[in-house]
Length: 196
Image (cartoon, rainbow, N blue to C red; front, side):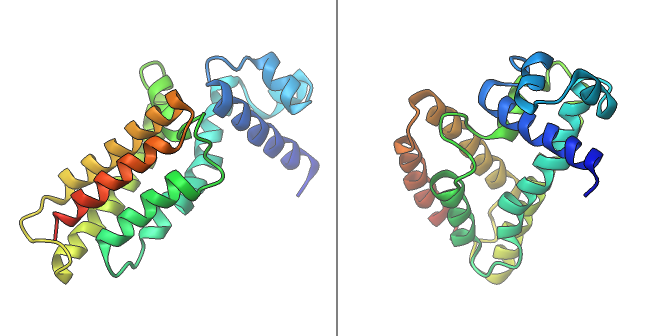
């Protein structure tokens, strides 16, 4: 990797960590420069402004990471009910990247930035739509394989499961504890079993 590419990647990674901990609007350019230890000239060589950097974080860091963590585990699953539950369990309890006190980075960005920045909204919606499509497909496949009842509306289930995930992440942030996740997971398991 060339020095310029390494510098750009460093800016993105360190800025993401800062934004994940503090929020996008609370991370100033000066904070980013101090965290990344690059000069203002180096920052502006790579990005026109903070928002261009923010979009690069979404497109170049978050999308691949979320695809790996949220979507890939649902590819080619045999039992969709177990797969969806296992995914949520892993994301909430086992995943070491997402910290309880900071919540879900995609959810945080969505809540903080979509009302103010149309480009962020489009980029974040692309990530969300990929997850919606994957969960819906898994449920539809489950209907075909007999794991899920044929009368189940796959899109409604998807929205319900996803909104529960995003919501419980916020409760986790408020309490700074994974204990609340266990309540959600218990109810999620019971709900998913009603789909059989």
